[in-house]
Length: 361
Ligand code: PLP
Image (cartoon, rainbow, N blue to C red; front, side):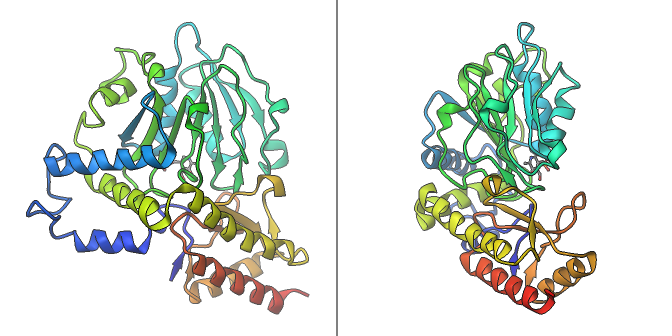
């Protein structure tokens, strides 16, 4: 079956096979990844290689720390303002292009006077703003945006320009889908369970000078600087999740050949599905405006609830699984993260064409 789940999502088959092979015992220790200490030399090698792979894939310089944390994207919605707001800069800007940006600002507002720099609500979050439309505060502590809105399937083609204000990006649902110029960001964070591994770990790439803002008064686990100082091993790390991130990043480097190649594959996969929408004579209606279409989450509607139900039932029977849209928007959503193979997207494309031919008037 091909898995189009939005997260926890498909993993590369070779990664699942290796994890299965090593589940009883890792090479070296006579125990599995679930049974070894997070302070053992074996795990130290795993976490260091995972970090090294991430640094290599994204070309991350020593000016940035790479952290592995728990608590998912949600905890970071709170931790970011806790760490980055200061007495001198008690407010931050949020660019809202969908559900997750709204969830992020909801948490941030509990900690400071957050300002909405742009809100796509009036157009039902169908596109990303031009830089000229952003109402940015030059004295903001940071500017936050969600580069890929997982539910609406709306993705920024390039990062917004925020001048001297550090740009903070929730990249949970498109991290590592293409190369990035990391030096344009103050911080990039992502929960792993879409492109990077299983739920249970989040990855944070943060400019080291920003860590100086973390106050000693924060609870230890909430303090990003302490995590950096402790090499992400302040407490018992989510060893299995980090182990899988290591395997996924090995796969990206060695099997795929890096992020340029991954990007080309992702563009090819997304194009296949968007072409079906565009050539369906209005049968399939995409949620996102063409210039803001996501390469990761293809969200669309059918002409009626009955047809949507039939589409989901028949696709499941054809081994194309987890295609229901998010409960808040309905319709269909095909999440085609890095691990979804081209063959899976081809199978979905063929199914969609066939379904349309049978049901369009
Ligand atoms: N941000 C984005 C863009 C997401 O898609 C999600 C989850 O789907 C989250 C944040 C929340 O992540 P978590 O469930 O790990 O808290």
